[in-house]
Image 1 (tube, rainbow, N blue to C red):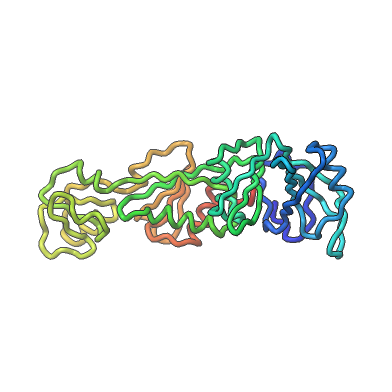
Image 2 (tube, helix red, strand yellow):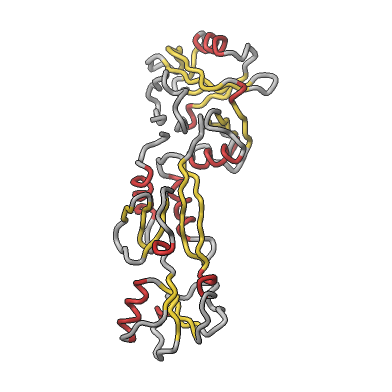
Length: 307
């Protein structure tokens, strides 16, 4: 784990680790350096100098805007400053990319990974990100997980996607790049031409479908000659209310998304109080909350910190 929280960072195996993000990022020191940008010179330089007792990562910037990143293993001490016991060079100028992006949270692994990928940083390089409030962090060898998030629209933006972004903003999870997939209910409705539509509930954008629209949750008194735009749960409600099954257009993300080898998160009304794993797919209830989503992401990604 990269979260040392004041403990001694063990170096020696970090250079080959993908998605290495030191947290909290207060352990990253951004320092000027005028010596040779070689591994031997940098190691000698850092071994000869004292370091602050919370410093684990040193980013050196030269006069020609060249950069190097090193991890330091500090000697155990209660002093404010101590000497480095070991040094491991993570990246030299050829492999270090400086990115200035004030919208990137340096405490958010997924945000760092997304910024690195957007700027073309490869899994063999190190991104040095000057982010929010000019605070600095790195992501070494970024190779984030890709997560397909399937959701119906409207409303916009997709609620599930928004909630996952919230979880990634605070949870201790590996870097994840979200790949939203939207199922537009208006496109599904356009596949039929009924006298009227029955939709599960009032949702912005579904009032105008080219035919009268009724709302199942309002339990219309008069049974119309409608087509139901809904899932199995909506059909169950209809049977209870009206004692029959109308023509139906399926809208369940679980039914409309074919399983494959991609990590996928989606919702299903048939789940109410728990999550369900189905191969590479994680299904959460329609009314899921943030703690449940965090648990789903941990199970789907194998938990862990920086990988």
